[in-house]
Length: 518
Image (cartoon, rainbow, N blue to C red; front, side):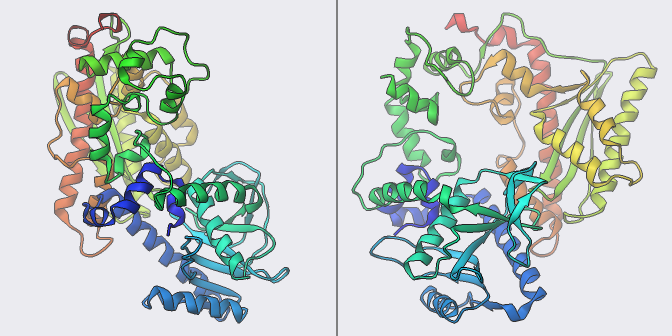
């Protein structure tokens, strides 16, 4: 028996989950996974209230306190009775085929008969653009959306396809071959065209079911999913023993290498052929150097003899903390001038979303621009730094749009003038341009090479999400100690950027080997 989640999961993980259920149940819970599950549960409850309270007479709500078997019986009974809308649908286990599924919403297709499955998820299902098909939240009226384009989400596609196949088996699937998803923003239903999904779904289902039933063999290979997988320690040990090439060229790159007969890190380090065509994610030569660095135990490798990084008389390190797509609650800064560093946070502890976010952002921007102007007036150079600017840029621009007209909020043009200037420096880009990084380019991978350590051993972006929920009291009384923890984590992030920048200026050339040295 497999659910739709297995269809986008690592194939080897599907095998391990099925073969060792007791070990899986005993594995420690990943706090990031738990946080995302809790947030998704809260999102679904909010959508349930919005929809059912708008037109309560149209809805049959399946009692979630009942057993799964009873909920499945009630779901089929509601479908047989022609219910207009069903919330909390559960379909009977299909033990012969091996499917199980549930769905937040079933909408009756009044034109063709049967039901249209709609899921509720806590991520984006569309992006700004055009070409998506959407429907209003309260009436099923699909139409082309001139303001949105589809956002590829394979996990959503596999989930609605599995629900559709199970509805089909019971004779309750709409012949329209469509499904829906309510994502972040919760203002429309994005419409999935199942005709473009079902063939891929059927192939994946056959593959994963054979694995789960022990009919198809798998081997570990490193992919992005490994970061949060409970089986990763064992897989990593196995891959390390065999020097598996996926440790230095993960995902699809490892597949390409194996097709070329390159299976180990040693094979890649000794590569003497032409580079593989259409190599993804960087230059193929970097992969060869990464393999050499892994064998030599080098945490970084210089691309050039000289390391350069932008420096200024007045330097400000910036690190933003956000909570999912709800907003940016903290802008942390470290002012470095005349040999003195001062940390200053601009924060709102009102639970996001909140208008108070505008106040903290306006104060941050006003302060930053004042420091920039003061440097110019005194004839000093100025630079502000972040690490991997995509998130900061997103929330700078998004805050200007969302809070337009609020006192102290800059225009979008003012934000763009700053982030497009040479005074906004991305240290991540400086690292990427000048180093090959065998263990990854994240700040928590690179800063320790420069000698920096975070005070909190559990510090991570995932962990900070859970800390934030406790800090603002989403699930109870606010925990003030978690506020201090978040501020310390944010302060360490800006200090880490400063330490890394100074190390690049002063010591990196003498401490890190060149690629030719390997």
